[in-house]
Amino acid sequence: MAVVWSTEGADDFLAAVTYLHDRNAAAARKLAERVDEALKRLDEVPLDGPETLLRGGLVVRSWPIPPFRAYYVRRDNDVLVLRFYDQRREPIARP
Image (tube, rainbow, N blue to C red; front, top):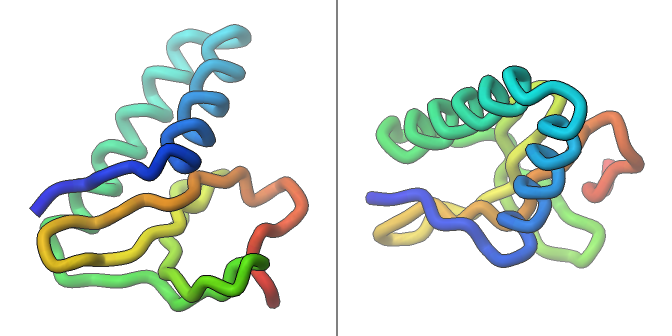
C-alpha cells in the first residue's frame, strides 16, 4: 500500500511546513519527518483513527499528529490524505 495526498491535503501540508520553515527550518524538517513516520505507520498497520464528519458532509477518518490532524480515507491500495489541518484553528469537522 501507499500514502497518497489529495491536492488540497498536499497544499495544507506544504503551507504548514513552509510557514514553519520560514521561522525555524529544523522544526519544519522535524514536523515533516513526524508526519511521514505517522502516515507510514497508519498505512502499514491495520489501525484507524475515529470517524469524523467534515463540514462538507464527507465521513473520513482522522489521525492526530500534534498540533495537526490528518484526515484520510483508506482505499483498496492506498491511504488517501484529504486534509492536513492545524487543530488550533477553527475546526473543519463537525462535533
